[in-house]
Image (tube, rainbow, N blue to C red):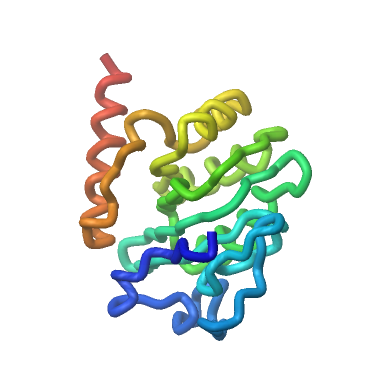
Length: 194
């Protein structure tokens, strides 16, 4: 797991540690000291801790004018034991929403397991971003992770599932990624209205 780095091709345009509005502003990374772990496995030092014991993130891009943020995750998402969604919502999403972010892209291809609890924080997040004209999308969840998320009824609060899996997001610029997601969301809304 220590070889899995957060996506770095957008770093010429944005770094969360240099963004005063980012919850990770001022962080310093040591490329040679591996100190963070998911269970007994060290992870790359570029991943950011936000309060969870088993889940880490990287704010890959934030555009405050266009009101979107793209976050990548690694580890185990465990709401049952560690209430990871509470930490994510309070420590990451809320500061970004306070700065004007209403659209969240959560890249979950390195989320290895999901253990759900209730959906209260997801519902709260959905209501808040909806009031701002936004949304939350989870991209590239593994099949078993998607099944667990569906069992917890997350599909009522975040956009996830087959439409948002196998998504080749790395080839796109951040704004184009969000435009494609918005087109998919608009297409899904039109299908539901018939």
